[in-house]
Length: 290
Image (cartoon, rainbow, N blue to C red; front, side, top):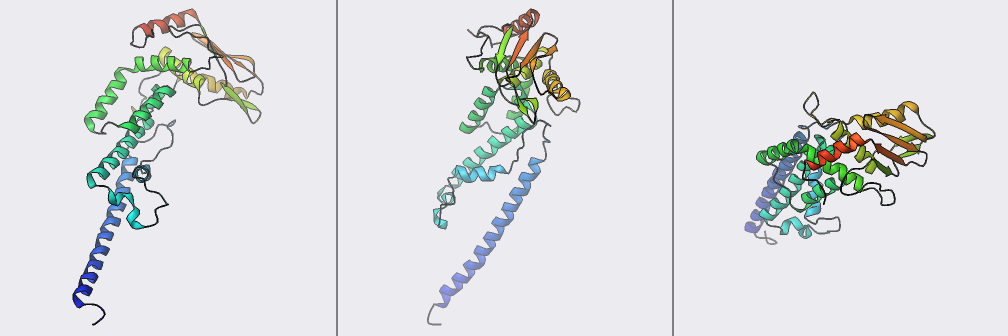
């Protein structure tokens, strides 16, 4: 052959076979990675109130963390090719550990112990440098959470109350008081009022219930942290009565009551015994604010 040397043709064809083989291995390994990820995803069943999550988002996040985008037109523009192996594994480990901590906290309903601010702080810490998701660290973290539930709940209750708009704030930063006013506690949907599933009111009622009624134990199946009595009480009142108008409707409970108004606002009113109890619990923790 005069157009190409036989030696060059042999090398080219042999390398073609090798490239196909390597690509087949990559495809096989990629499929095994997705399968393994799917198996990991099914190990922790989600709590009924957990947000929807899926572990294989790590592949999307890994792509984003390496700066890949649809704008790269040529194969040589793929950033992963320019990354060293150690750096690429470091990025992937970061993405994986972050996702696994979020999955653990979400599916075990640990987020139910945390205020909105605490959740933001936790997720920000994962963005910076998540702890390695290894047996020792996970066990230590979970044990610490169980041991410090009281302090976490008091902190979360304080943060939830302090997050109320200053226009409505009736608490002070040093102690619990008898009354807190919330706006946007509920809204009208299809001619009937419904409690807002997120916000300072929801968080405050949830953490108040956990502190007063100890709604923080493990459920019978030992998989999840319990939901709260007070939030169920509020929800059932709205669901059972199908309210199309609110005129100082009251939901009472041991230790206080909540009064709802037609503009969606509410007043949380605690009796003196409850306030004293909360301040006593506050004094036992490191949460006392100067």
